[in-house]
Length: 215
Image 1 (cartoon, rainbow, N blue to C red):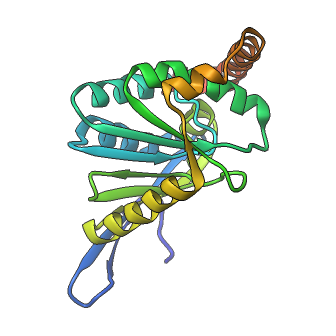
Image 2 (image 1 turned 120 degrees about the vertical axis):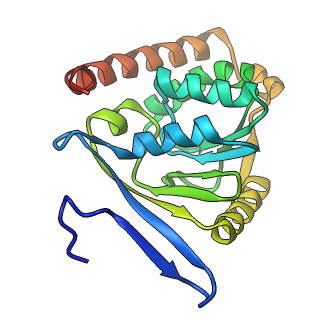
């Protein structure tokens, strides 16, 4: 559409000749110091009223996101997170599983997608709007990558997308309960998960230190 960087990245789409969806283009761009996608997630987690569903390939949220998720869950928002089962980056998968204890303690529902390697990045809020694109909930996407998402505001589209996700969760995902997670743990596995998490956290810190200081 030939937008310049100064133009507002908002479009209106008429799907039925009666309803209009608002779509906003958001960027995280370390070169131009833009954190628009991160702000969308912050707004979602702060303002959600009833439920949030997150689908994320490499779910390694930093402290800010974890705090916002725990606060949302504590005020009664149902938070569901769908992560990868099979993974193409097992180090990241082990690190994710180290966080499962924390997520479950904060009443966040967990599911692992089974049929194939998961590469979706999507979050839906209150059956009203969703954000979809290239952004993963981790510090590399937040601070050291160039990412693009679309925020779509349309209750009909959001509800249909949510129904589609519900079907995927029911048919293609394994729920990670306290019992299931406890049965999957042993001392060796927990050490590998802890080490993977600490290693990735250190790498993320090294990659993002400069950008977080300049934020």
